[in-house]
Every structure is written in C-alpha cells, then in structure tokens.
Image 1 (cartoon, protein in one colour):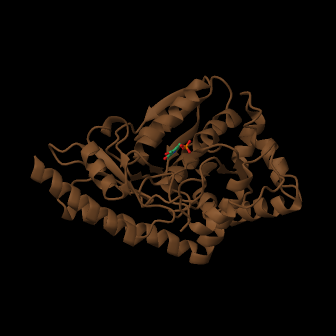
Image 2: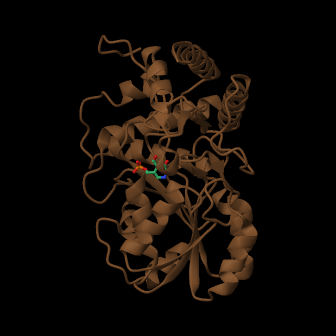
Image 3: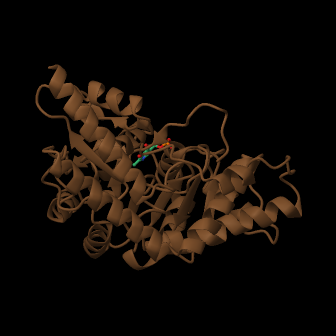
Length: 373
Ligand SMILES: Cc1ncc(COP(=O)(O)O)c(C=O)c1O
C-alpha cells in the first residue's frame, strides 16, 4: 500500500473513496501532454470501458468537474429560460437538481419531497398531468443523503409514456459504477457519475451520457454555455484520437482508465453483487446492534451507502469520533439528518471485510459511549 507513513484511515465515506494502489500508481506517472496519442489512448480506454458501466452505446462525455458541475451542465445544455421541469426532491441531492435549475431561471415543480420515502411514480405521473409545460423530470438514482435507491427505470418509462419527448435526467454520482444502470434500455436521457466515488479515483472528473432526445434538446436550448457545452465535448471525444476541449485533469483520466480496467477484471456483475452484499451486511449489522436506519421506510436501498440513525441520547458526532479513533472514517448525516444520523459508504474498492471492521468499530464505540453515560 502506498503510504505517507501515517496509518491511513479506512475511508468508509460516500466519497472520496479509497483509491486502490494500482490506480494510485497510474496517477503517479510523469506528465503526459494532453495532445498526444498516448493520452488519447488512455482517454479512449476510459470512455469505452464506461459504456457498459452506464449501459449505453452512446458516447460517454468526460466533463472536467466534480459531479455538481456535470449536473449543472445538464441544466444549461438542455433548457431555455422560462422552461418548466419537475424535480424529485426526496433528498439533498434531489433538492440540488432543483437549485441548479432555479439558478438558471427555470421553473421547478418540486415533487416527492418526503425524504423518508422513495420516488413515487404515481406522483411523477400526477405532476406531468398537472403541469403540461414540464419538459423534463430530474431525479437521483441513489440519494447519498438518505440511502434511497429510486426506481429510475419505472420513472423513465412513465415519463416517456405520458409526455413523449420529455427528458429524464439522472444524478448517478453515488451509484453509477457500483449499482447496475441501463441508460439505453431504461430510456434515460442524461446521466452523470464522478471519479471519486464508485470509480475509485481522485476527485475532479465527471462523465455523462446523453440520449438522442437530449442532443435534440441541446440543439434547441437557449441558455448560455461555453465551458459546459456538451456539443463541444462530443466533437473532441469523437475524434479519431479522442481529446477534450482545453486541458483535462490528465492524471485523473489515467486513474479512471486503470480503475475501469480493475472493475472489468473483477466483472461488472460481480462488482454490483459485492456492493449488494456489503449493503445487506451493513443494514443487518446496524440492526444487530439495535440501531435503526435513518429512513427505515424506503422502498429500496442504495447498495453504495447506508444511513443509520444514532440511538437516542448518543450524538452521531461522538459515534463518528469513536469510530475514527478506531481507524474508521464515516460521514455525518446530511441536511435535516445532520444532528441525528451518520452514514457509512461502501462503494468502489471497499470490501466486505472493511464493512466488518466498520461494524466492529461501531459496536465498540457504542459500548464505550453507553458505559460512560
Ligand atoms: C448523489 C450525489 N450527487 C451529487 C453530488 C455532488 O458531487 P461532487 O461533490 O462530486 O460535486 C454528490 C456528492 O456527494 C452526490 O452524492
């Protein structure tokens, strides 16, 4: 393991996640100029190996930004001022979609606003019927604030049935790469993921897929964009030797290409199964320790993270500190759960043994806190 001498904390966070040694080494190579065949080959590998991860044959676009930038880019590429969209706001990241859209002058209809529930497809259908000008529905596949897994396939099918031509926009930042995703067969129009989560690399690079419907919307859209222009990115990535507009984060591209080689060596199905096993173990472990999930009534749970309620009288900060002392870094609750819960990420390079170590640290911390109270 590459180390700076200090014992590394086990990163059980929903990003950035542990970067495997092979990926670290790929990112430690001497600089390659970004207008060379050598760099193009790595970029081509990254985007090609992402096609099955997104479940699409559409070209994958590299977007030089963390996840939020790719999502904001979707807004300015697909819409014009005054357009209307419906946003499923059952978590902080659903709400983030709404914020991006509003900041560009788009009218947002917030739906499915209960953070304790998954997206209700009937509510999506009702919103489309109530608002005939809505031209897109945005949702989050795995909302990292609650641990919900929303049923993208059913939402997408419903949207296209009720409003042919409308776009389905999916935030896959904490899910794509760790959870099965079928962009083409689910009829998704835009989806994005980022390097620092399931793709086991450093933060700073996102990837997006667009459907033909989305490209048509981009051609009509009037919102200004330049750095974020997907059409410009597509023109570069489709060259015989793929490039990007401007200078890409070279070493993150090298890392992502290597991380994807690793994922394909393991086999994508096995990667997804591993995530499902870790999530099941984390939920069972919490229950065995007498803890409730943060949102126990979700229809389906993300397999990349688990949000757990701190027991009555115990502060999540103390719990996380106790685990940190034992070498395990978890994440705090988000938004309305900031003071009442904590989150365990189990995505990317994380293994079942890491989840076991985390549960042991949790059990020891709980025992310690209860003893001292
Ligand atoms: C579901 C989801 N969407 C968007 C983001 C924002 O991504 P970034 O921090 O890479 O900008 C995150 C980050 O945690 C996320 O989990």
